Image (cartoon, rainbow, N blue to C red; front, side):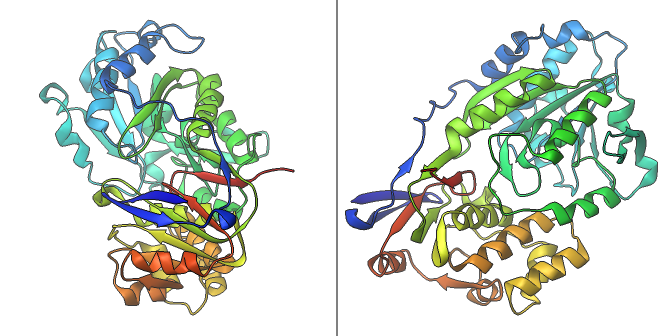
Length: 403
């Protein structure tokens, strides 16, 4: 069976024997949105079970817009939202865009129209107590300290994507507040809750706590954007906290796939602009595959990326085996601990192979075998009893089909 797999801007054609091909089951993907700005405007005018956002605003309101910087095309997503806020007579000077740590430098600001270039931008600083406010104590007894600008705002708007995450299960919406904008001590304590388990159909305890925090803040307004492939979007929805579940369902409809059985070899690709692909994308790709590979099997991730490596990657490179790398991550608790956890956990369960633009020595120090050319993947397939192919594994959730 001929299978085409995108890697970067390239396409790899794989001839997988039908007898060894592991079947997958997923919904037919929704078509990409043709006019992203129009989709945002429509979502704001017709939210889910809520009137247009502007009706909840007054000219004197201070608005905090929490921005998910992992979203592509922010220069198209933000202007309709800012214009909508201004239609309620909210001044641009009363709007603050709050971004999570660490800072990206906000290169997307240059893509905003001239009339929005002076919008105030703040990067969350979880270690600075002066930039935090005590909100409340949750039912579980956790004292919640959050970004001060967000706590003090009259209205909070969350502009986020949705993605699968080893800490909260499904990232985005309410989790953009907690734990993303929490204090450093809380964020570090939560590292121990990282899990390789695939998120289920029910909300995880930590995400449920994030929903509670959202309500304690006064029920923020959600704008959820569901990505398709390579910078495309397939859905934009808006609404109150209760609309979060709709975003999760739309994410699953696009990216959840069920697999008939574990495979000896999982071949995965990361398609699209390689300049946008991060080390976290690679780690998420490996983790996705690790859930459906046989114990001790092989995972081949095919990319055209040369991502920058953060603290977690450096910690892994300084250890001799994945188990020691996980131990180092739990001891140091860096900001990108989830990335290192995903990579090391996959390396514990399977032999990793990576085609990328990273140096061979670097790949080897990350417990993986470097591939020099795509043709080597075909050799791995020829020597595998069963094979599973997962496109865009950094966004996908692969789970074993229940019998």
